[in-house]
Amino acid sequence: MPNLEDIRAYRVHEILAARRNQLDRNLLVKDGGKPYIDSRLHRFPSESEASWTGTQNGVVSRPDRAFLINYAARIWSKLNQYVFSQPIVREGIDEDFAKDASRTGLSINQLMQNLSADYTVGQWAWIGVDRASPAIDPDTGQRTSRSVAQREAEGDRVFWSIWDSTEVVDWRFAADGTLERIITQHVEYNNSDLMAAPSNRVIRTIWEPGQVTVLTLKKDKPKEVATQDVIRFPAQVVPFVLIGVPSKKAYWFDDVELVQASLLNLDSAHHENLIKAVFPQLVVPAGLIEEIMTLSEKGFREALELVRGIEYPLLEPTDAKGITRLITPAASDLKAIPDEILRRRRELMDIVGLAMSKTDSNAAQSAASKAWDHLDPSATLAARSQLLEETETKAVAISRELDSSFPEYQPVYPRQFNLPNVAEDIKVLLELGNMTLPPEGHKQVARVAVEILDSMFKIDAERKAAILAEVDAMEAPDFASISAAIAGDDPGGGGFLPTEN
Image (cartoon, rainbow, N blue to C red):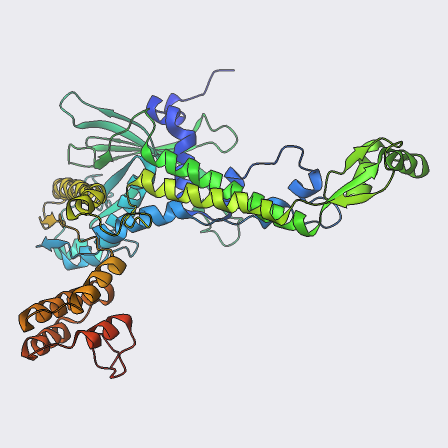
């Protein structure tokens, strides 16, 4: 038989092949939940089959009892929260595109947040730029000329999509840095035929300048191509923008995921230890197993399961105590794992560089030292903003090549980020309020208090202006009432806290 394999159906870039396993784990932990638990929860040495699989006596398996406290997800979401906490200026952007950039309901901000998240966990990611195929004249086979209104009525417009680092399976850059081609892969779910069972099929798409080749792979022979469609477009560009740098080297989020996996397993181990403290370790005479094997005609493994339940009993010689009994660890020993979990959580935050507050720091820490503590996260956030801005700008340029009517705009992302330690700032304000200051000094303290409140609760601009005007009108602000307002227990109810109308 001739070899029908098509290398386009299974070729993978060497960088992705080397990084695939860890990238899959990083992307799994991004969303967390059961898929990540199933991937990263490990079986204990000598753990019984009943405990691990739950196949006997209706026992729920340990993987089904496991839970995930997803610190890794908090890390990427915090990065996004800071970067997108301030308005992003996009003068000249089309309003319809701003509201639905993906043609699936995602706004441009939501789409860029998804890109930022995939880049954080996946080392690199891609923006794909596409548009609905223009109409073809059935008589000539040529594209028909349509007005902008006709194209809009037919839904033909530019849209963007996000591809994570594992969905673009192959790529090639030219010497000048432009993309020569990429290959994407995704699974297409088809339930269009009401009278047929839904089905999945693997689609590989080869993107080249001016041409897209869509390959549908055979379900039973994934290295062979079932169908091939070629779609041509006039723009001589590969409509994708890369964020990040593909590399075989380890990536900082790998460490985050590895620590997260260890925390998952430690939490599960601690949960099991608590159960074992309530249901202690069984110790039985070896002769008891032999008697059960004789009376029931069962093998050793079956007899052992009957005796132990979900635990491995400790067997001792018959000439020992000969007493079936239970042993249990001291309650104080149970502290070891929770303490280790707390330590690893702190190390995890240090890995990321987002340890915003150091509880063990000296209260008299200098201003220079505090600035140094905030240098890493501030620089990280500024670099992320710049990278997203450059990536979006490139996507706009490609959109213009695909559709000359696409409005050109320049996104401007924030570069300055305020990373306050609210608890520490309030403490300093309270100390300043108790000092003897001139009226203007107390007013300045009150103004700073309002700014802290604004950062915490996002006070309406008009209300904030009214509060500041009230502060300026006060002859000698009563800082005790300001402190109460900050703490949320102002008996007057007015204070500086925003209220719902």
